[in-house]
Figure 1 (cartoon, helix red, strand yellow):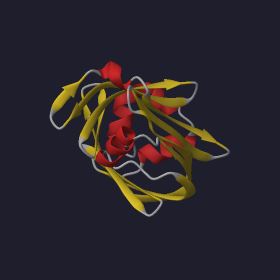
Figure 2 (figure 1 turned 180 degrees about the vertical axis):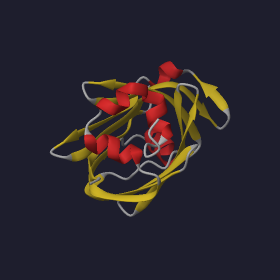
Figure 3 (figure 1 turned 90 degrees about the vertical axis):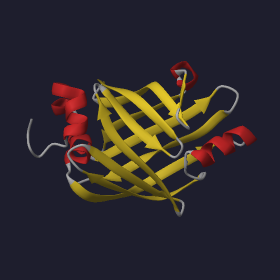
Figure 4 (figure 1 turned 180 degrees about the horizontal axis):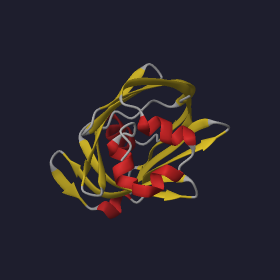
Length: 177
């Protein structure tokens, strides 16, 4: 593996990592603390259960505007902090076998990553909340897609749950060059 490549995403994606668009590779190849600026559009669910779950996982508020993402990448994990609407949404990512784990508030998600049509697709394969394993099928409406367009890194993240409905859908871009 190239020493300039973050082992986390490159290790999980294997040879498919090299075929990703340059902005996606650049975001995941950086080491140390990096800051990226861009724009985001956030939609949020309005039900009481949706709002409660969103608060417990530090999901961003609804609206559109500037976005700042800080990624601190070390050899065995990454810390991401997304600053949206004046609030921070921190998470920690690490690898367990072929699964990307992300701790977000009170929940830890396990994602299978796959390169599809030049983009990284994230699919939930396991979830723990407050130390309790939850059925992955409950999280079929949770996922993400990382791609590139017009030389920019693009992201699309969505989360809906049975009974709660839409928790959040946020999408936008970052300048990584």
